Amino acid sequence: MKARVTVTLKSGILDPQGKAIEGALKSLGVDGVASVRQGKVFDIEIAGSDKAKAEATLKDAADKLLANTVIENYAIEVKG
Figure (tube, helix red, strand yellow):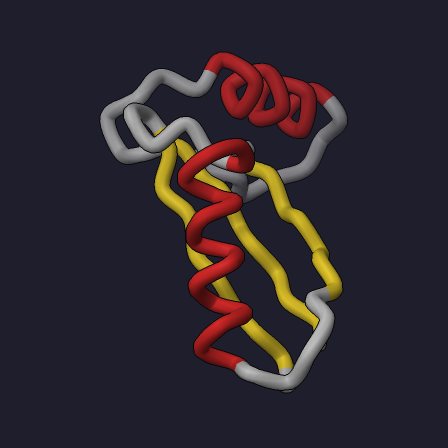
């Protein structure tokens, strides 16, 4: 089973890397960019076919390692 965990900074947390990307895009002439927030994406393969168990395993992984839950949110998407 394939899954994706997307980790993003919580609103209100400063994102210097996002600001740097925003500035670089503007300096490259990319118009219309109002704001950039940077995040992480993890594509993970889970053994088995139990979607609920896969989601629980990924939540455990995100809470323990993939995300710093003090400053980051995460979303889990399991693809059957």
